[in-house]
Length: 175
Image (cartoon, rainbow, N blue to C red):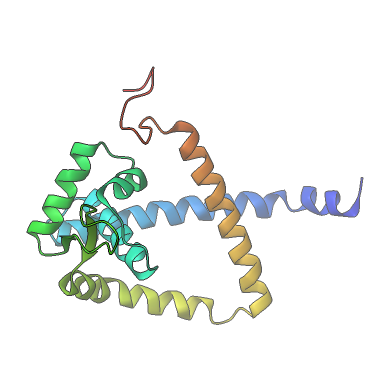
């Protein structure tokens, strides 16, 4: 057995501890989403949509209702309800600002949405930066590699079990 294989066997307790820590993080993250949504009379899917819209816009590629639907795994009607609720709450607006096709609807967050999200999540960001402070760059790069690999695995698993293809139809055997 190679030394690398022995290291992997010897560290199975560490690997199990990482899996447990990720589960704990997922549960806490879900609780955080519920707390944020509840305090603002939103549903968790509204928060997920709002964060996706803000992230996409910050990344330079605003979402369309169709791309939001794919990201959330909702039906077209469900996505429409989410957008309507966010728009009514003053968090999102629909725009027709595509320079090449004015028929394209893009979802933009409002300054109100940014302010509400910043007020709630900034303290968490500060705590997270503080928690990462003791680690050097090499340790943080290793952690990033692990988190990215685990997230990629989760995304692949979700894609394998997705019951709503991009065309919005249900797969056989799905609900």
